Image (tube, rainbow, N blue to C red):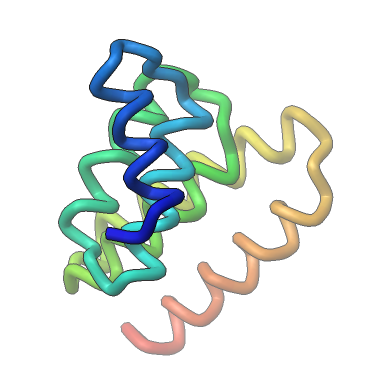
Length: 107
């Protein structure tokens, strides 16, 4: 675990849980090729803030890394709906691409 991740984990351990903190820990875990740990943090991030479209995006990536494409699709579809509602055009575009790629892989 790198020093930044250790500091973030210390914040979590101290009871400072937020969706952003969980998202950041999930991203760090994905970057370290630890999708199971990422999944735990990203599930919690989306529970804390169900409208956090970027967390849904990474949750889908974690699910896909764990070879669960149906769960990845669900996460990305939920994230897409959140991003569309919030007007987050960049995330809408990214998730649209992810869903198209998933369709091609499964099709």
